Image 1 (tube, rainbow, N blue to C red):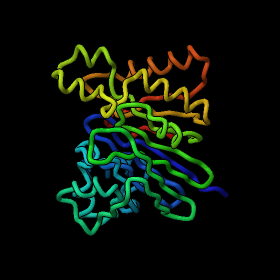
Image 2: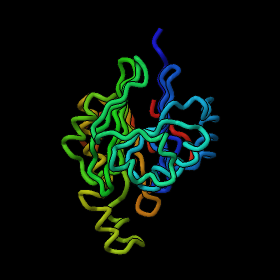
Image 3: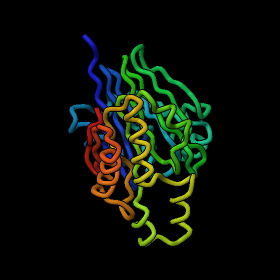
Image 4: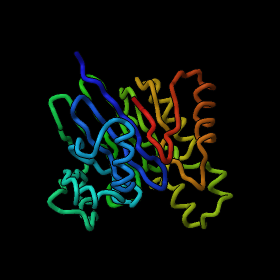
Length: 257
């Protein structure tokens, strides 16, 4: 009998990001950008517990991705995997818990579970996404990227489910409260992904094996769940591409698989 796979975002957005993956008895997190208590509460709501987590994989060092790492390391002593440039900036995290890698790396957590990183274009020390192989199924998380790089598209091709950034709406960003320098940073090739670009990536992925996408890492000031979903859904409908699309919740667990 095949093992059951579950993948959920526990929190998603500019205020904090954390993803939980379970395949059989193997459980791990991608990012810990919310408090240890919030992670624990979310896991318990899904029938799990922090004591089951065997590793954390970090995308990059920005606070909305690492906020809970220090307490996780202190109380759970969980191995924390990150690119070496990211690892160097995890101040306060028990160094005995940190496992530093080259930006492109692979970790096998079990005979059935493998995690592979890929580089994403973002203005951090180092930024990566992850492809998870669980048995004969593949999934991925790709957020914090200013453009749909071909290398990212290739890494995601063939993944059954993808957690994909849809950070901002261009008009909301332009007319919103952010100063010009911050608008330019977000809209740059090293910033975040705009809804229309997310739509194009979603369409590409749907034509290359993806069946479900969670739109993730939405800005609270420069986007709304309705705008992100409407933009992506309209583009898919215009091109007659079927795909199951949902928006990951900012504060509660949302299922990918």
